[in-house]
Each structure stands twice: as structure tokens, then as C-alpha cells.
Image (cartoon, rainbow, N blue to C red; front, side):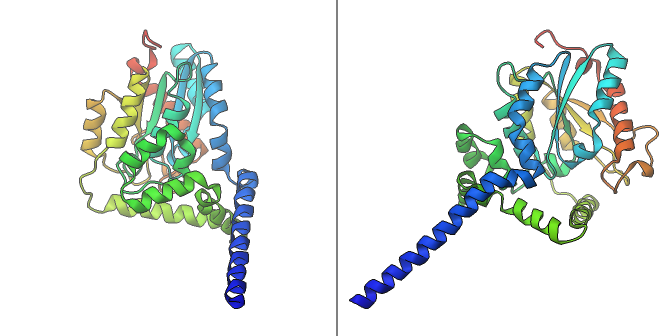
Amino acid sequence: MPSSTSSFRGELKILAMIVGVLAVCEIAVRLFAVRFSGDLRQTYALPATADRLAAAKGRRVLVVGNSLTVYGFDAKAFGEAYAARTGGDAHVEVEAFRGSETCEWYYLFRRFFAAPGKVPQLLILPLNVESVRDLPRVEIGRLVYFCDGSDVPDVLRRDLHGFGDRAEFLHAYTFASFANREKVRKTAFDMIIPRHQAGERKIHVARLAARRAGKRPAFTYDRLIRLIRLAAEHNVTVLGVAMPSQSGYELDPVLLKTLAAEKASFVDLRDAPGLTRAHFRDPVHLNEQGAALVTQTLVERLPESVVAPSSTD
């Protein structure tokens, strides 16, 4: 009997140590992760961004996207070109997260910008098929930061499939240390491995190229439709933009039909005049000069229905 009691106490001590270590990790991530993650800093700043956009004068423009937007959109060039074309001002806010896609964009917009007094007048989305099609799996570690409690039932019902994904989401929603495990890993690798970020970007670009070169299955765009319809409920004009790449690519006809059916505007920048290989930092992403040139072309090609505010704006 004494030996079993001693063994039980020993197990309790081990369990208490494990719980203690996990608690310390959770506290450390909540306190310090934001210092090492640009994504987290940007996410925590979203309420301030929404307030800034709401208080802005002129045309209120929100650009949501991924790395194509990070490297391919120049907010200053947009404002200058918009003023030159219309004589009016445009206040532009860019919320772009590398590797993000429509599921995350939907909940980002719904939580932070789909509220009275907070909505933009124009929502611009990059149309890379890899990011706007319905992917079988979403980035749960980032998605949880775009959701509040009222979003959880929708996420579990409409965006996650299977017990494993739903359990992972609830775990990540509850524990920051679990939600940010990939960010911690990448930060550690960036610190330890020389040019780790550049290497990951090359791998990402290679995967995109391989997908574009391969035979495509029939894609669906239900999440994109949800985002467009959510914006329409708040009288927000949605503009889809086909971004250029070095090698060029074909747009999915189903995507174009989806945009037309949902009455979203569209601008094709794959043939932006004057764009050369020298304007790219890699086969997919533009450099600063390329971003300025493409953004200028975007404003020049904006449909009049997008340039002129509607009576409800």
C-alpha cells in the first residue's frame, strides 16, 4: 500500500511539472510572441486599422490578400494615381498575410470591417487561383485570430471537416501556444538557419509553379462567394485583380463566371504595359518597381462603377 501511494504521488508530481511547463509556455507565448511575429503584430493592430479607415476622408479602400499583395500592391502609388485620375482622395489600408486565403479573408472582414461605420467602400482581392479556390484544409493557427466567439459555430460547421480539424481549431482557439507553434518554429529556424525565409519562399514559389503546370481539377469558390456576398450586404464594392507573373498563366473560367454571377468587378493585370522580368523578385512576386507600375495600371483600368462612389457610400 505505501509503495502504491508513493508511486501515485510521484505521478502527480510529474503531471504537475508537465502542467507547469505548459502554463509557462502559454504565458510566454501570450506575452512575447508578438515581438517576434509580424503577422501577430499586424493581427493585433486590426481594430486600430478599422478605426483609421472608418475615420478617413475620401474613398475608403481595403486591400486584403497574401504575399502577392505584400509584394505587389503599392498603397502610396494607388493614392497618387487615384487622385490624378479622379481629383479626389483615396485612403488605402492593406491587410496582407503571407500564405493566407479566402477562408481567413472572410473572417477577417467579418470580424473587423463588417460593422456599421467600419466598412470600406471598395474591397480589393488578388485572384491567384491557389488562394481563392476552396482548399481542403485551412491555416488554423492564423484563422483563430480572425474569429471571435460568434464565429466559432460557423467555422466548425462550414469550414472544417472531420473531428481532427475541429479539435485542432478548438485547441488553437483556447491555447495561444498551440495556435502559434508554427510561428515559433519558423522564428527559431530564421534565427538558427541562414537565409531560411528565402529558402521557404523559393519552395513556395516552386510549388505554385508545379500546380500551375499540372492538370487542374474542377475548382469551387464557395468561400469567395461568401466573402463577396458579405461585402455586398454592407454595400461594399468588390474588385478582383488578376496579378501578373513571370511565366504567365490562364485564369480559371469558373472563377471568372463566379465573379460575374456575383456582380464583382474585375481587372486583369497579367498584361500590365511595360512590365518585364526585371520587375519581379522571383517568378511570382513583384519587386518595389513592379508593384508601383502594376498599381498604377490598376488605377488606370478601374471600371467607372468602381471609381465613382455609389449613392449608398
